[in-house]
Length: 399
Image (cartoon, rainbow, N blue to C red; front, side, top):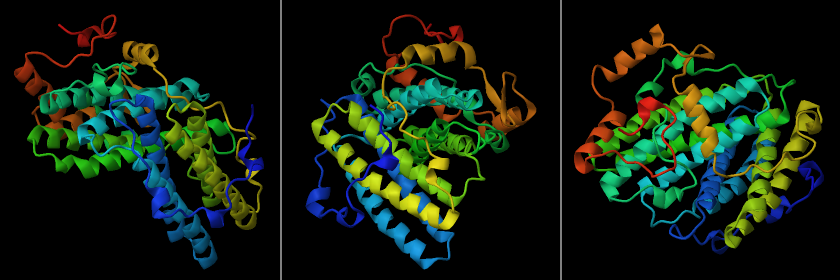
């Protein structure tokens, strides 16, 4: 059944502020929850954080006090939504357990978007990024077994494979080669705009998470690995945010943000297996419908255009968390040796790439390599999740 959020009404804005009791959500049980429930929570936290940060930036770039007040009203509700969503995560989970869940999000969310993306250039951007997040998951799995003596399998539950991707040492590129060409706002498929905003927001939240949690560890190798992968996440945010057309007006971006929130809450409500979490998705969808209408009113008044000119006439098929093992393995077999050059991709290590590698690594092993050496010293092997078949890249098969 089609769903057009422009034709639906939700909870009136003046009834959306919740009391402390209403915000006191019960967290999920990490030992018994669907791993993709946790992935949906992490995703929507990133989406809400982006909504809040975008609203603050928009407020800082307008001189109209009435617009500032209207943004502040919606933003406060968004902040409550972010707290309710993020507080669904259980306090008993360690930072590393949550980190592995973050990387499971990055792999399966980005892989699904790559599969569904209609624009070949944007599809390639997502395919390129997912092989790096795939390797991050593998490095953290080794660290997790070293520090907490548990397997990442207990978190990803076999839905996402844990094995090497494009080696993290090769993710460090000259910053100018992280900037992609943007889509053309008046020509691109509206779905492409939602994809770009979703992946950018998720990667931004991962970057923020690592920036803040990395130094909380005492173990030197953990601190160093979070520092290295945190820098790669900065590269990823640059990679994905540059896909968005900078010619979009503030009002276009505002309605795209609100429409995307409707899309994702609707998607997750449709597939959620946990009744308590599903109720949160449904509640927030009904809030976001009114946020979208408020944004549309602002666009009509201040941009002089109908939001329907830039938004999809109905929500796309639901964004789905599901295994992407065969898809990722195919990418490993065909694209693992790619790097970037300018706004494109090449297979050869070029001068800027090699200069960045030499300057950053300085002839030493980066933390992402040292964690493997430390793991081999401790266990006599690297972490491997038992899966059917061999790694698609012969150079990375277990010896």
